[in-house]
Length: 148
Image (cartoon, rainbow, N blue to C red; front, side):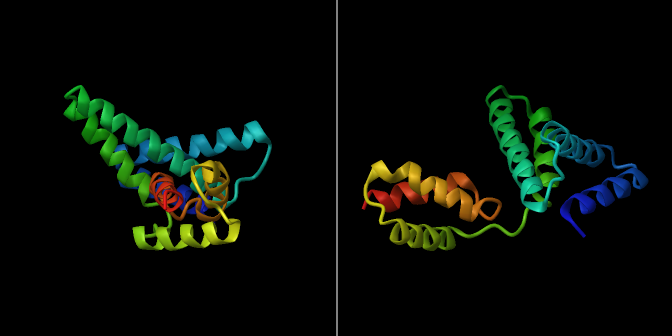
């Protein structure tokens, strides 16, 4: 079963359970997937769906920080609930130690040295770790590795 099929099945289950907040989040995710399929005239694979989920998660995290700064706890709770639903569709994330190991391997492969190689490193890291790790943590690990 593909990830998109699993999301569709979860939408049906949320409809049956009359779980409106979960249903709204899943419908938004499926709409984002459908929009990308229509725009690019492609059928999304699991990696592309994970990229969309990552993008939506980043949006929710940004919204949470904005709403928290404005003292809107009602909206923070809503966004946090959506964030939890979206995170359930991501594969197991790498730990900080695993990210550091992967980055060290990339530094050795690319013979990267110094902050000037940050772009090259991030492109390779994104290709290798997309969907497996939080790219903010990867960026921090790359900066640390290149500053040595």
